[in-house]
Image 1 (spheres, rainbow, N blue to C red):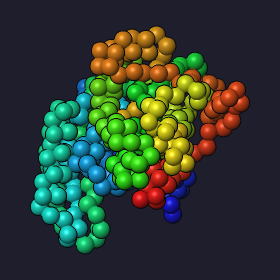
Image 2 (tube, rainbow, N blue to C red):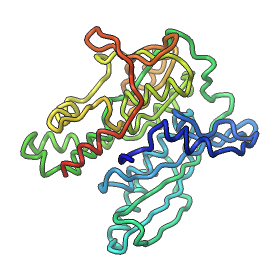
Image 3 (cartoon, one colour):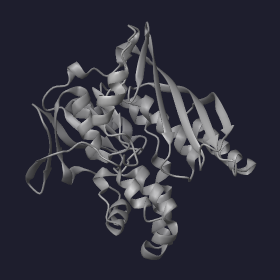
Image 4 (cartoon, rainbow, N blue to C red):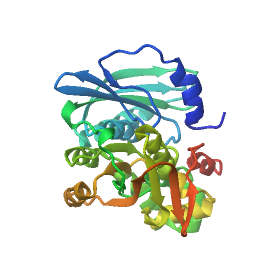
Length: 330
């Protein structure tokens, strides 16, 4: 199999098909396009999500915290606590571990989340440090996004810019290769895009403004997220390519490495489905945080389509992320 997330077809065929036992307290369980499990506790629900960091060796403590907390925020939930499992190869030093924990602690404090436990182990089963995180959040049950409210004409929106995480990771991992091409100043700007990784603020705000669906744009990029959103909501989606926002540096790096930025891992950007009037109110609130929310498409009757240069074509399911193609240059 290719490096990256297991393809959705195999998830359905092998993984999800073997999850047979169900409990009535579980409101949302494993499915394509669902970032979280949601458990009913009466007035409130517990929102949980888990993610590993495997695509980079740089700043993994910070990434581990933000990536999982982003998932929880797609339910409009406030992340409360996070558990870290850290697996270290034998050559890991005490300083390496301290840097990871210091970075994770700083990231958690930035978004008001407590590191409440986990597991730390040295093992020869891995050849580099692997972190897997589980986040626990809470949300009023009455405020959970409701897919049944989605209607034709509702807007497909993404926050900030597509390709945020991928750009930052590539700039750090391929620093020596890129520095001589784009210059140190442009490279530093790309690396610092990791300051935009959290989507907790927009997730909580979108929950208040009646977002009907939210999805963290991770592996597969904005096209993959749109495809997964259609599968999860059972609604048709139409995307206009020329409306998708990118930082110039993302497009420049993608061109140099011959990768598709629309299929590049994009944590730091959230895809949501929201009514037009609610979008205007959400944009007003997010402007206070200097966070842009851009309409890139709309809900249609059926199908998953892209308009590019006036031509309509189908959006295909996500495959191995373009990040892994880029890192082969390392």
